[in-house]
Length: 314
Length: 236
Image (cartoon, rainbow over all chains, first blue to last red; front, side, top):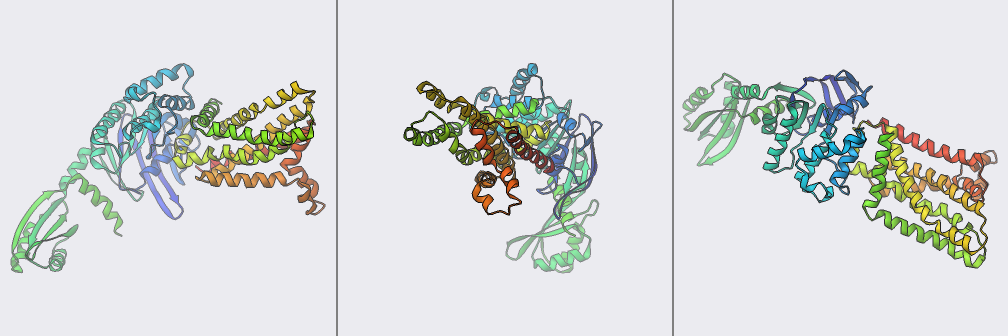
């Protein structure tokens, strides 16, 4: 359905998207996950024809960008990140405007607008001005305008940002309902958000893919990594230096002094390495008193953090 | 053209969704009527010259106020992202916005038609210059609008768009004035005289409808609309 091949986009000196390739199949809900500035919005803007890529090929249902941008734009429904709307317009007027701009025939316009108002739960707000609506309702209007022409592909840039938990659940259900028959590409920097809605996740950082898989695969990957927390009555520099020298650890951080010269640390290790024995021996050799030592699995957030932080360090 | 018409309708209604339209029409009529009645009773003649003489100057301030929001506001609110990802060609977007501005100016000018109607009742009005004047007004308005619409692309700030439009329109308007021509090398004088927006208006408002004037106005309008389409296409 969507094929992006070696897409590059630069803003002056900054490379926003760097030779990025991925595919999205029909009926798939793909989540783009990454920190701010990872290139999620740029990818979506390129796909929707708002920006042109500097390099690479894009194929959407057999159409190519930018040559057949108009045909591709017909197939796509797009909710931009900031959900821009005209505050002076009424909800129905706005949706009718988008429907006619989208080339929906006059006969079908009213029916489509009525349908999306129902789908988005906007019945009570239909005759209000957009400027009078709460953020949650504005987001529904934004979503309604994206699906009003019954598109094959839905592109949603941070669809739940700024919403309260109840609204998030509602919007999530809406997306899932839509994703049963259509292709959805959504972005977020919140992991549970993507994990709950998407059938596949792509993790981006600095315009590149740093990880991808189904939410389940990502969870398995998350369980692979471990964190060990321990506390010692020793100076933090000495502990960090020794531990770094003794075993290849991914990351070690001092969590602070817990009282009376006892410092707490957290070490993150690779898949199968259990560092508890090393810590214990280090404490014995140096005659330090170990007051705490336990191992835990990394959360999905931490996997994301590691995938994206590692890239930053040259 | 469905897209252009839909956008035109939205933009036209947008003027009336806020107090802008009412404030604009009332002030436009107040200013133009004042200029007209200022000389009307002194001259004691049934004619509209006073009205059309000042109209280009009134337009110089009022038309940039109509065009300043057309692109700048979309950019500021971010709605340009929705607009440019809709399946509508760039020329339709530009045309839709232009038509909305033109229609709005047309409606404002239409209200001033009560003047010639009143004059017609008071005495014998020569309708030639009146029709010519209104026709010239439409052409001049179109030219100013296309300039303003084009310049509104370059900024998110409506005030900047407003001032830039006044500036460029003013330069183009005075280009054919005698005071400018007198300071130019003789060789350039006919060229600049032809390029001035104002000079062409003077001949039309006298009731002389010359194809050269009409072609001139259509070319200026077409040129700036074309540049606008290029700009919108290239910004992707």
